[in-house]
Image (cartoon, rainbow, N blue to C red; front, side, top):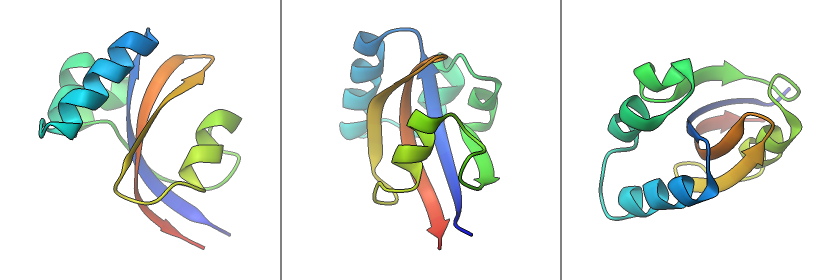
Length: 93
C-alpha cells in the first residue's frame, strides 16, 4: 500500500492561498508561513501531517498527494475545510 508524507497550509480563500503560493515561490519558508497563516492545528508544526495512506484524507487531498511530484507546492486545492497548499514530502508505493 502506498504511504505518503505531506505538509499543507489551510486558509479560507483561494486568493489568500495564491498569495501564499507566490511567497513560497519567491523563497519564503513554507513551514513559517504555515505557522502564521494556516487554520489547521498542523500549522504549528509547519503544516506537517505525518505519514498516511490512501483514504485517510478527504478525496480532493488524496488525489493530489498520491499523484503530484514530491517537493513541489501544489494548489490551491479546495476541500470542505477551505483552500490548501500541499507539498508531498515523501511517497512510497
